[in-house]
Image 1 (tube, rainbow, N blue to C red):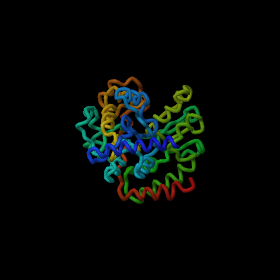
Image 2: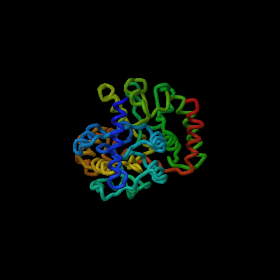
Image 3: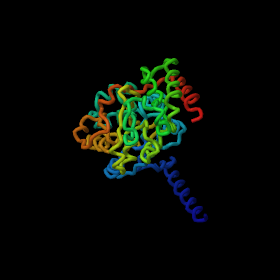
Image 4: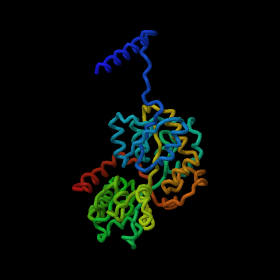
Length: 355
């Protein structure tokens, strides 16, 4: 303790001396120099891509993960996160931009924006000019089925109504995803603001789907599928196949599909948080991701089609778990504004009660 006290006094003396030289306070030491702080979805950037970025720029990436937009937003809103880049879906880009949580993008610092598919920007109605966000990936959640346990099934959201699979299925703990699936099953938009349609979707989930589910799960559905606890899960292809990568038998018997009915799609984007301390590195990382060979590596690793980057498609070596064409009937989730409260009431006050 005495040694610490002596060192502290010495530091204070040096700082005081520096301050007296010109009457100005000493410059603040940037403790995060050489580090980039990223907050991203689970299973969403390959370690190999992170390592290449670190090696090229001589920096360290600090990488934290979240399981839902709601979790991410709550943590960022609480403040003190220290993150530089975050990866929200489109509706949350709108919410966070409107609340002043994001830096405006200086596109002059990004040389690879020309690689982004114009169709993705056309669909990104929340920010088509990339004022606050740069598209990362356009995709959708779907359904993974263990065909060794479930050899016959309908490729629709109605699979969750099967009582013979009760106790062997999960759906995401994600309000907009599950409500959106129910809405399209009834022929409605995933962005409806009609109270009667939202009520009908709530009733479908409560009466036909929820009784057959083990739980709503956005974090462990991949692990549960991999260990055989779950035979049918709603989720993301990259999560499921990452978990079953070492099990060739299960991998061969796993089918992933996006129902032809459609459902909620997403464009996850790279955004720089307001007050980010490592702006230069943040821009470098965003531009690095959209190099064609890097984007192809990202897409191949997770079994994705290279939906957001056109030249990357020429560099892909793997076969995606689904095709971009499978997204044809999906619909991006919009910022619902005040109507979001209708969904919150249906989800938190009814569907999730007792879960």
